[in-house]
Image (cartoon, rainbow, N blue to C red; front, side, top):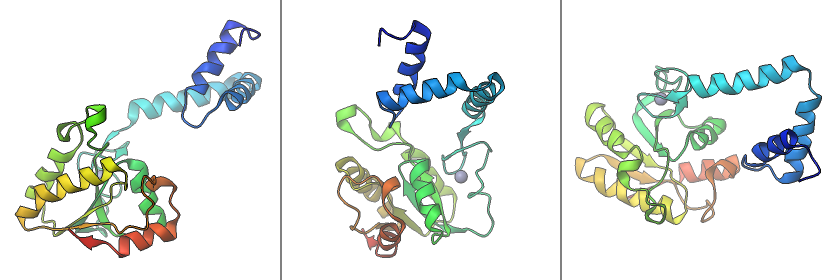
Length: 199
Ligand code: ZN
């Protein structure tokens, strides 16, 4: 990209390092940003910085939120006896979009992956166990992705909590192997939830 000056090239390469943004899109975005009035650029960068500074983990379910307790955990109309375990806040949002699940969530913020050196202690499993000891939870629905890591994480969690006498279920297949929950259509997601099987 030597035909662009250094500052433009750097902007293109920063934008291009974002997920889903190829070189062409990065160039288009870069020139779009350069064409914007200064105030608009300041609003955009300000919003990014504010989000980064103000977003943290919900102290109950560990989703990303700007409150101490997220809106779902603090909603008195949700059923606190059922907890769905998901990998990411985006997966949680996918289930929220179908609007048919009324329990709470627990966001692991990752999966166990020996290949990447991620063990149980690196994701929010200890926090889940603690929650199960403190709150009156009757069912845990494990909704990790159907990747090898997602399945291994589901098995690990189920073995850990079953002795406590809590009902453990796994969302049904129908979700393609390796499928990313976030991109599955709502009907498939709903079917997976309704057809969940006891572990
Ligand atoms: Zn929460």
